[in-house]
Length: 379
Image (tube, rainbow, N blue to C red; front, top):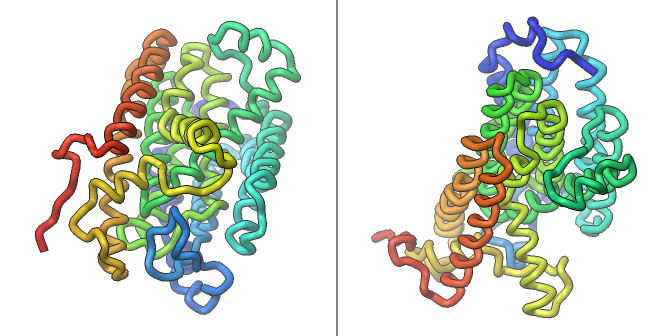
């Protein structure tokens, strides 16, 4: 286990690491955008008719490659300044490969089932428990704390949480910049708390993630020149959840509710989607539909180009949808950061977020959403 915030890392300027990750991700993603034109039949998203498809032409969906290499570049900077962390950091990144690989396989072949992708994400989580001791051992939830007090219980809960967050990030990946910027917001919150408790290594790893995602974001938003893909979504979900678990494990002053409130938007979107599909519609929970909150906002709030199918207008509507959800994500991240040491306040905020989400969703469904939320543009 490396020194968590040793004197060498204390001298490392966070901006150097962030810029390194950003530059590598930016350049690799540019190569994907330029080079994928000749390979678009293999790496492009050609399905333009599905319930969650809002683009007008095939787009390469392997943006996760640039993000992974950007994070690797940031990690290399850490190893350069603190060679003693090389083994641990190498093991940490290696743990992500099964989840990332299963996602990329789906991006390239379109043959990997959700169950198969979740299985390999669970493998990644189990490897992280073994190699870097990233395991949940406290929750502040009666009963569940007893479960995680046993090694097997802690392992199963950790695998469930990591796989759940990875799948949740994939579910909100519906519009240009939506999932990627939400992850950036959550990683910034994580980095802030890590710096606050003097866990510099976790803070720097979170910033490496921020830089890598922003390098991808520059090509994804607003033009949608490249997509995150399942590889990118599963990698980011794994990376975010593992850093949150490590922060919690190494810092007793951080509330166990902090990671949940930090990630509550994608997590609650997933849970609500399961409820909506299984109990309200009676369809398989894995069946794609166009009734996610972000899909409803697209159809009912961004109205100026409704009915238009030109690439230009679809891209404009697409890009104007994501900021609504960035703001929603921020409403949980801000209190999570402000009261990171208070389980009681975190729990209240989780309940408040869930209640607000459901009320907003049903108002939109019933065409009773506040008019000021609708974006109208005069041509």
